[in-house]
Image (tube, rainbow, N blue to C red):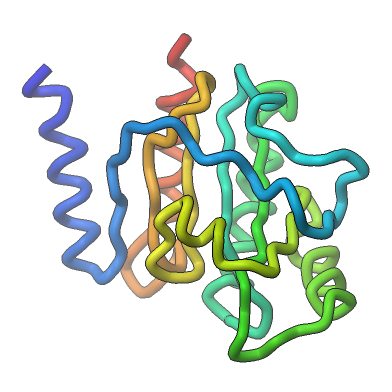
Length: 177
C-alpha cells in the first residue's frame, strides 16, 4: 500500500510546484445544486443517478479564460469515454464580479460546454459544500459517489498538462469495480 501511494504523492508534489494542484480527497461527494437553472439537460442532475459512472464536475464562470480553456479539455475527454460509464457536469459558480445574465451564461455553455450539462448556481452554498477555493476547479468522483480528486486552476497551463493528469485519474477510476 505504501508503494501504491508513492507515485500519487510524487505526482501531487510535482504538480503543486508548477502552480497547479491535484488534491486527493476521499469523502462522499456533495450533491449537485438542487436549485438553479439547467443548461443542456431537461431533468435535474443528481449524483445518485450517476452511480456506476466516473463523474467529472467542473466549477466555472463566464468571462474567465482559464475556465474557457478547460472546456477544450472536456470536449476532448468526453469523446474518449462511453456516456454509460462517464459523465461531465458543469456548475457555473456565483459570479458577483461580472454578474452575468442567464442568457449570457447559456450562450457560453452551449458554445463551449456543449458536451455536458451545466447547472447555473446563483448562491455560494455549492462553493462552500464542495470546498472550492478557486474557479475553475475540477472534481473527479468515482463510481460509488466518492469524491476522489480535485484539480484547481486551468488544466493546461505552461508545462502543466492537467488534461493528461485528468485522463489518467479517470482511466484509473474506470478500472475500479
